[in-house]
Length: 507
Image (cartoon, rainbow, N blue to C red; front, side):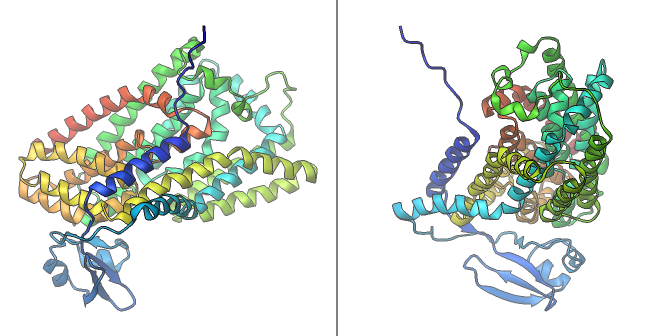
């Protein structure tokens, strides 16, 4: 009797390709359309209006012109560079002819979008490869193994604090300066620490990713979501701040409790892990610590870890204070690599081989980032994003205030699934959605919260976002993540709806 083959959930690549094909199929059904947009030309001190046919006209950069186009935003926000992306003009949506594709055109769009996605993501991909290479060098010195073994002695009986401290700090970064893709650098360092503490790889992903996703969702002063959305809505980003702080405390606290509850079950009984099979996978060898190795922690190894950790401190400072992105932080870790070449004590051949091997281990992760970008490219080249926005704005415009805010939250969940850029979604939607707050009689800051919490929460399960990349770091299937996170997702939805409805009734 033949043994039935066990169903194996598709890899991250295949999941993204399936989503890409589904989105591409939807573009044949959803009409193409565009809003007219307004942007500021700094060199000429004028507004440039681009209509649905891509025809441009110029207008003086004055508050009266903004009022003429029903854009309730201060002129200063354009002139000081706060709003640097084109803003959608309310009531300007027009259907446009669908781009002619045919069979050949559809196939070319499918292929070109993936190549373009890789090209658009090359800065993140290079960052991932450099981080992998640096980690390969650090591992070759034995510094990581020795350092984590020493740390394990300090962790006995205090493992829960790993989750609380790490998730709390990452969530704080997500809430204040949008810490997201940068957390990919943390996995190679933190996963071994979680394993030595008796947890599994899923606990590590939950701690890091939930910290970033829930922290960004409950943003307080994140310039890429709360600040730019508030400016696009014509209000100060400090409006509604107490509610956002309360949501951060409640949602991050809930995520900590949820993760600790699972993690402690696994620590006490490893068979409770949802990733038992993955934990034995040879692909995790890079994260495993050899407890039988010589426990000496030499001065050279200590210096190596200090240099490595110093790179992360510089990265965090640069991202938060200097507005760095991936080009700058990749330069930082490339500098770390050259310093290690002088201090690590490795022979030249060993050093180079370690770097190449380490980078190679994260090559699949880097490709996942690029392929995921292709879904957004198909949406953009098919001109359906504005159509979806127009449909939902018309749908909710005549609702009472409580039903309006509930539906708007779910609308932003859907929009966040298709439009992964938080700043892009803000400048597209806020000039259209914010005036509806005045119509139904609620504070505009509540619209910002619905936007933040909707587009942020869907990131927990959106295959077009960062979750598949994070899971690929430790070879965990998307199905295992869904099984872990769905209860938390439901609880967070309930929490959000309670806070939103309370805000409508109280403010």
